[in-house]
Image (cartoon, rainbow, N blue to C red; front, side, top):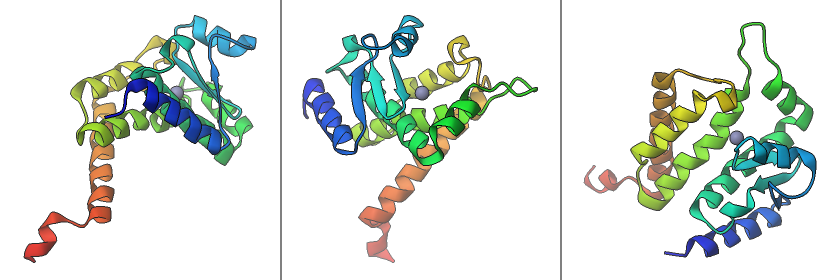
Length: 174
Ligand SMILES: [Zn+2]
């Protein structure tokens, strides 16, 4: 098992090779610093995955890198203006598409659990439930039942993909 520091550094190198910059959230220009001031660990914006300096070299920092890189990839794929407008725009119903984008970031937390331990830890699910119900994210999906269902579905999909890649253990009998 690699150390948290080595794993973090390897992820930074991987992202940089992919063309994603990595920077400290609480250093540099005003916007990431403001986000850090609001208590967030990271930010994915315009080609850069920002992670607060105190998390560099830690497991939390590694999770944040993966989460923010997912946002950066989505901004590339769907374009930054579309991402930002749909992330920030409050529709007449009070809903935004923020939950959709954040789900794509938080999915990485589940995948990391699955890669590391072969299962999703209940505390990871509850952290995600709490984030989706939190004021910091504007109560983007304050329905724990739905968030828990999304987590279960993601785990099942991950296992399905892995099962197909590795060959089902049941195949030998049939
Ligand atoms: Zn996010």
